[in-house]
Image (tube, rainbow, N blue to C red; front, side, top):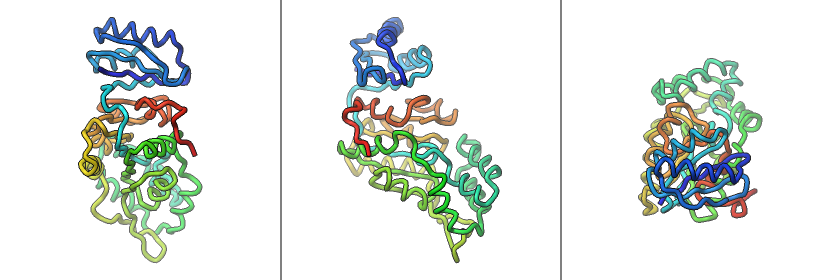
Length: 292
């Protein structure tokens, strides 16, 4: 048995009946549909051809996120999440570069790295080198002035934790941002790169080894093993090429407003809604969310 979850700003019952009809025409053997939250999110059960079901429904409903997955172990027991442009709205290194007057130069490299066009580690070293001698105080200023949580991030993390899931933030960014963000959002563990600082200034280097794609994948696999979970009990979410490995390893791997290479490869995409869509994907309705 499979579930297709449809999430939109406005959903109508007619659309859900249409979804069931389209699944039937595609040979997916749909069952009943039901509201998770009326007008916002609903499930359509079906028996066959999940890949075809996803393709059919994504094509049919503009402005609607569609997540297709097995019904078994739908509610996840491990969340591993990227930070920049996923749990928060910005790329911290780009915003920090603005305090050095070189945002455009660094943002171009960031974008290419996130699209998978550059080696992540080499690109990180090159960008951090350009920040050499920036005053350390710029980090806290950037954190206060620029770093904002993505809509639904705190609700997602705190709701999953309250229901017994392990939550891990793994960032190719920096601990000076990731640790306060992780604490604010309710992550139980935070992993990120360490900017090296001396005499109150950035040294232009990052401590090795770098937290990269392999680190993210290894983290998911190791925590999964530690908890004795099956792959289908895990959820990973990110937006860039360095998130692809962990997304592919997760039972539900989600590309969140992601770069094309990630959106094309992920098992699920959120292009329209906020991060609470991942609670709907787990069958958790708004009345069960932990907020604040």
